[in-house]
Image (cartoon, rainbow, N blue to C red; front, side, top):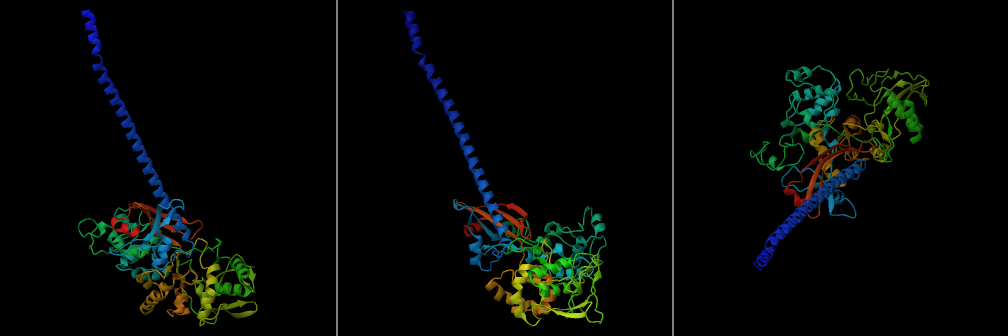
Length: 533
């Protein structure tokens, strides 16, 4: 009995050992569940973060596509803030999900300024990659560069030396031997600049000259660029971003030479004059074709055309000659391989003597032709130089179907409606008196109306800023708008505000539009958040 009692007593003690075991099992299961839940939560958070990252990227990409579509239209050219906000602010990426939106903004350079919506036309700056470097053209290029604040003769000559193909330094410039003496192999490029950052390597140039207080070169006034000596870079903490030369210079600009339907416009400077003649007959009539091709062959008879500024060597540029009777403006064409090409009594099998600098040359110009039947004076089918109203009437159509540049686009002309005074001052043919009048009329007329590309320079005549003969000279350097656009795209959520931004440059001179630059940046500083929402 004692044994049974003892045995029974031992048996009654087992629950004391089982309970801790159960608790341990429960604890292990709880830890496993907790670990699993933690992993699931982490996976969920990762999935949400991935989804948000994709949404942010889609938002930015939608903004890029939006700008690319606008780059080939007139819609981007909005002069009033209300118009710009309607076009560029709070654009949802889809109709079904309007929580994710993007805005397209212009970099803010003044601390207390409101955010401006829109894009920047790169043609409003001086494109250093399309400056003329030949002997004659370099004179104009020097004039245009020296108009930039802080530009020196040393920097000017060195920039042109960097662009040209030879190794002969200009009087104040530098070529390969100079850079090699400093251990800078592979410089200069003897060609175009890949970016403005590359410009800082040029002899006589520094990063502070190119970007000044804008340490990262993004065009935005960041906190570290407005706090004095607290952090790099050095700045005067005045609430205004000093951008240096980057405010005035660019390495990419251009205008499309395509029609709205994507077809190429007729290039009046085509090398094939017979083909040009036939295209003009089809688009206009034989008299028009005769006048334009004769202008190419012999040049204008009633004014002295300037030597065209190109990046070619002096041996290759067009040489201008006097007519047989000694009057200015008539130039003798040279024979080519096509000896028997003729249209309308003109021998088109010769090399043309004149390059048409702008479509303004088609107005008010006369041409002295030579043919088997003798000499003839041809007059413009679009009116004489004293009939300004004729230009307003005909220029829209001419701009729609004609161009002075190739299918690849026209590079380097300055948008007179957007360019800074310093850029305008360097354009040949603009005096200080004319510049003052031009800026005044631009503020009162262009800004109040807004202009399409078809008449975006004609106001210079309408407001009597320049005469037609003056535009004959200025024409090769000016335009009313370009098709290479830069902008800041801000992606944001309706509840959390801005979450990402990107700096982009798109080139609408070709189809499809090309993305020249896409740089992801951090979200906008907090001071902008209330304005962006």
